[in-house]
Length: 406
Ligand code: ADP
Image (tube, rainbow, N blue to C red):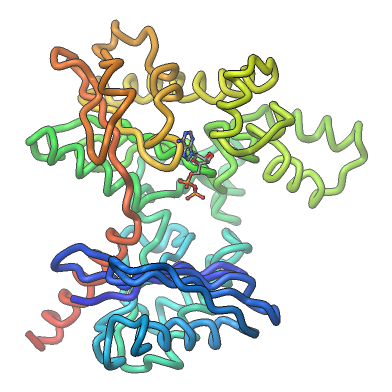
């Protein structure tokens, strides 16, 4: 099936047009600066050079019209007819407690996504805009919502409840949700395939380390705990986000510095993490350059980043009662041998033995632990778009079966 995968943000849309049979992205690209006169569309057909189009793209409806037009374009396109787009899969950030799997978009599903806006005020509205815009241009094509939260939503209550009055959980749905679900799900199932055992028999810790970072305890194929929480702010140190913090620190800073709620929110989400501690950069490549130059604040930031990963490896090994594999993915997880090495140092007593040589130069999906390491360590490139495309295909086929159309 040929699936258009859309990740709609407030001023940008990332897209991939994927053939689920070959698992190849026939084209990928991005529309940026939506709402401005100088919006930019970059588009790369498979095996060809990237092209760039600059023009006025005032809203998501026009942006998606451009995406469809470039897919159809005689010079840069990959299809001849709109009908070749068989389904559209949308990344939807927050499915709340409603969605534990992907869903065919119906009026009811749209309403449920709207009901979850309060939980993801920055993301769900843009996802809704993208779904509506797609419906305008492709009214007869099935659309599927694939949720970042769905993989985690069935974790046990003792992992998702916060120690606040229960009534607040009931009233406002304040609980741990977790994010990056498609990535954790994908890399854990790839690890199981590489080990050659059913995922139902394995205890796996996945570390998705990009600009946003999270880890998950995947026990027998199910996420039983994850580091991000009610929002993507909790847990590991990130590029610009604080991760775990004593909640009193926030109140204390607000009092001392006279910060409003929105200023405190900006401080924790945009000016903390690697950039906050190092004062240098939120980008791990630049942090590691500064580490090499002996920059003390960058070294501290790097140390905190790796220490938290190690701490959660210990925690998740304990809650799963054992460990078979650790997987690193995301821009940092896939590319920083230093982060992998530091996070796993001195964990031999848990059965984790990294092979320094394999760790230095992995390519593609690579086993980077020693051959006798009890726990296997993998570097696995994530592919969230492919997961969305495959899920979309499955949901569309299930729907067709249930309507007796196949
Ligand atoms: P996003 O979460 O936005 O998808 P990515 O998964 O692309 O982000 O990850 C971006 C992060 O990966 C940045 O901090 C970047 O510095 C880091 N990164 C990319 N390549 C390397 C590398 N070779 N070494 C260390 N960090 C890297």
